Amino acid sequence: MKKRNEIPDADTWRLEDMVESDETWETLFSRTRQEISGYGQLRGCAGRSADDLYRCLVFDEEMSKKVELLYVYARMRSDQDTGNQKYQEMFGRAESLSYEASRESSFLVPEILEIPEGKLQEFMNAENGIGHFKRALEQLLAKKPHTLDAEKEELLAASAEATQGASRIFNMFNNADIQFPAIQDQDGDTVSITHGNFIALMESRDRRVRENAFRGLYSVYSQYRNTVAAIYSAQVKQAVFYARVRNYPSSRAHSLAENEVPESVYDNLVQTVRSHLPLLHRYVRLRRKALNLPEIHMYDLYAPMVEGVHRSYSFEEAKEIVKEGLAPLGKEYADLLEEGFANRWIDVYENEGKRSGAYSWGVYGTHPYVLLNFNGTLDHVFTLAHEMGHAIHSCCSDRSQPYTYAGYRIFVAEVASTCNEALLIRHLIEKSRDQKEKKYLINHFLESFRATLFRQTMFAEFEAMAHKKAEAGETLTAQELCRIYHQLNVDYFGPDMHVDEEIDYEWERIPHFYTPFYVYQYATGFSAAVAVADRILRGESGALEGYRRFLSSGCTMPPIELLKLAGVDMASPEPVNAALKVFETLLDEWESLSEEA
Image (cartoon, rainbow, N blue to C red; front, side):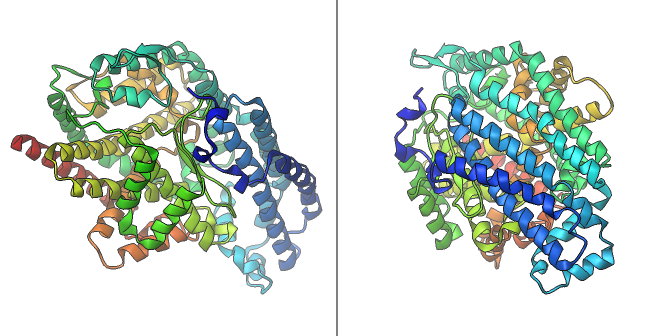
């Protein structure tokens, strides 16, 4: 494992495009901290006139930009090496500054909501530029029943820093402190299990390696189950607390309302996927048969179902494959993709202390960034396509919308990324002339359905159950969380699967559980993306133009309406049903190719 300073600059992101240097960050930090006091001069102003309200909104937005820049830069520096004490300290200060800004500005929303609606409407019709904030103010009015008076809002804002500890503790535990054992790989070499290589080990054709990696990783999580249960319980209690004080019926209702998503969308997803679980059970049977196993275990889920097809890709090859696969999105999209590849938007390889996984992030006014832990597998080629989907979505929104409306909601975030994956896999399957390779690619697409549509819905069920228990006053013990998670695996993977007890601890390693009710959006986004990709590949009239409008629209309308621009209605179960029909077709195609062989 290389240290951060051993990675060539060409393989790292150029954060200097965001903030020129750490010294520049320090100067911006000091200046912004002083400017935050300007909120004090705005107290009591919002309701006086349209000009005063406009002045308040502009100042608040400018402060938001500055605090966000400081926060994102420090966090990304910390993520590239979580063991770097300097960047941990910078991020801690940036986080504290964001809480300070939140406290100082907490009076603003209650003041705006105290303005009589007729008077507020009059202000909004003024010709002083305030019309720019009309949708933002309308969104604010929708939250009126859940907004407290100024004194209580200030108290809630002041409590934020004290209640955000669970996520930070988990991040440090899972990325900086936890150590996994070493095992022998299929070549007999000793390798330490890491977050970055775990899936690669689970994809080994040597079952001994898969089993040892699986048992090795979860043996460590098992040792910390009570600690992680306490951390996660604190996170859930925090979400429940804020939902209650804001008069929401549940933490789920609170989280979904923040994204303007009806709870029926969540329920539709779970119910529709549940009704199609026999398809996943059928896939497990096909997998057991393809691997020629008397009994299939959880550690067999990632092993390729096709012998003799194993490729490793350089990062240069991965970029070329992604460009080819996304060609149906047109020249404008291809140019943005090339811009990102050529200008160090991407932090490519794993290094000691680097945050696990992958993401795309950035700030308004600067190009987006992508964090990878690229290891050369086909999965990681798809991860590149996925994260560049996020990056280009952000790029299109930022270049088309003002700061106020550029940031798209989480609910639609996974559509652009997963649409890229769907286009790429269709391209690779279509181009393949070798039956074995075609089966390998179909296997990969089947795995995308298992890992995204089915698995993330299972996560969503786990999360909903955990929050519901906390809301009922029940204690979230490690034993109870493991019991819930075990039963969900039994339900989802069906009678052919031997559900090993080690899988009971998998919930401990899922970072997205620390952003409540996030994971279901991977599944809804996947369903919407499959529908969008189908429309584009079929050449459906207006499909590409509608998708481009979607990518460029930020949060100018509710997420459900945004997706309608791309021809998808997530208010109905139809997109999930349609995606699962594709899954069934792939199973049929796999069986047909197997019979021919």
